[in-house]
Length: 201
Image 1: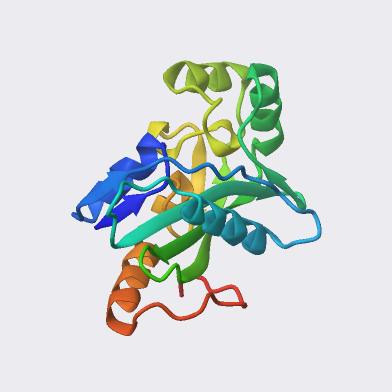
Image 2: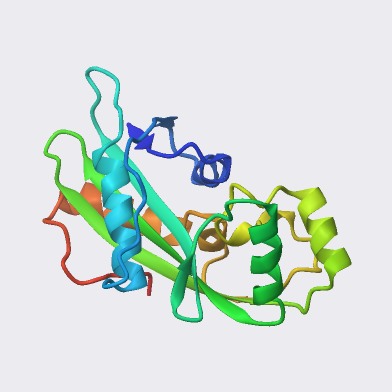
């Protein structure tokens, strides 16, 4: 059995794309960013925390999936905007520029508590955005529960000019990486958590 330690409807939708049976569980982990750590290490650390602090049902067995997604722009992490004013500021800052989307991924074996940590990143370039375009985007999809204040799946061609890398990673769960990690975990068992970041090739 797979357990997804996330309340995100976008991750739930993406995981269904793999055709796997899973259950949604809550995690008590609080996301933190440490300025002394690289974006990939921050993303993996939070993903591990979410998996380890997942609240599982009695008798649970299988694997817990933890994931953490954020933007990396001009040398700093950008998470979910706190309010609409900040969401507007973010969109104006990202307008016509490129940023990175990082997702840390963790697979945790419920029985052994062993974990596998990895990450993926995608480069996203925005069109130049007018205030009227930003307004339409926010009317179409609330920015307050999304990293960076936007959603790829709500774009109708007026937001994103190009993506290099995994599109599902931009939404919040890199399916190509997850598929590979699940396959390796089932074939090889659960090795010790990697010390060096590993990303999708």
